Length: 323
Ligand code: MLT
Image (cartoon, rainbow, N blue to C red):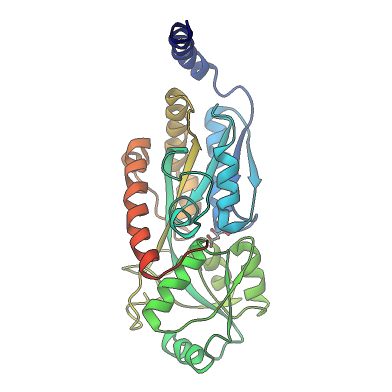
């Protein structure tokens, strides 16, 4: 009897899903953002969400849920209803690195969420406050070496993009700085401008506007080549310290979200990424836009798995973990 009921239930669900997808979305959609408003993740969420909302005819509501480098927000997304109305917009830190760094996550990053669409990625700028007496990356390294572990630097917590950037910087330069955690690099940037903290490796989408405004200094970009958005900033390699870190973003939904709804959301994300105004706004911040093929749920899921294995090796080798 139980088996028959299960079969009937799954038949009903399979009939209902396409109908559900036809009326989806019938109410506003929430995007859970794992960091504070005003930071790089929030910027991507608001730009992409606004355009997806236009495409789907429903408002996208941003829910900034912070803490533990985004792992609290991801848990909230995992536990939300799999109906397409709650999504999570995260990145390589929240949806890959944290799986290795946090030993007691109560979810599996690769199976408890389903990939909806890959989103833009951007390199990082090695930055300092204007009070730091260094004009080149070499002078910054010398300054840090002369003050071992004394210089406060910003991150958004262990596993955040700015933490991964700091680790890559430490490895490339043989220096360290104090890792001061914030709820996001939006608030951290305010303190860098105010020289409350002195250094930060932060995504170009957050740091480039402050560099352009003359409020902070950038010494190098963590990419193979200079960014078209900031051709005056040399690569870290040109300055003698090769390091490449790119923070890619993505959109996920809770496991069990009907594939028809995932597909509808993915198509709206692709429309958003092909929109000229959206591309201009994001590319001006140093963001690289993925192709529709790269954005496909299956391709994005395969990419996330590859990144998970790659960062696991790096983080285990660097003994970065939180029990
Ligand atoms: C943010 O949005 O605040 C950043 O992504 C934080 C980080 O990952 O460094």
